[in-house]
Image 1 (cartoon, helix red, strand yellow):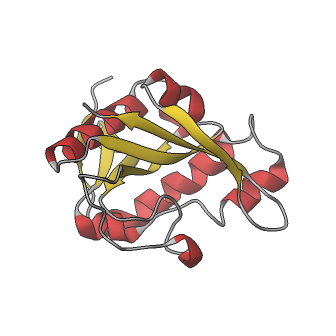
Image 2: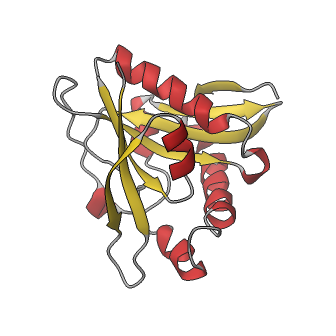
Image 3: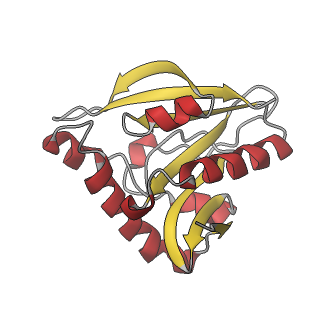
Length: 176
């Protein structure tokens, strides 16, 4: 399949949100209970700061949105616009901090075709160009196999706060 990528713009938000909802519902079920899948929606989703910063990508195939994801030079590690307690817009120092890989989602119709690897490679290259020597992310259990295959290693395992905790894994990679 021939994929293209481009930087997301505000007009893409409805399509991105729809893709994220589909991906969360369809791709987390093999790793989480139904209650955990629903609870994960409280901490997963679109952070429009990434679009405003010009660091959020869309991957398309024949005009159809196949996936999305981005990177950030801001302190927020994960979470969407609605998870305000997780947000920190402070700028990171590339000399001492790790860039953030953020909000990666693949449409269920396009899994295992290289969409995630494409997003990671473009984001890692951009973070390197911005002076970052390391990248970190908060991975879902469903994303962990891809990220390990791309060189990311677990740093710590956490559970999200709330009535139904959701397991997640902070992962990192040297970019040099």
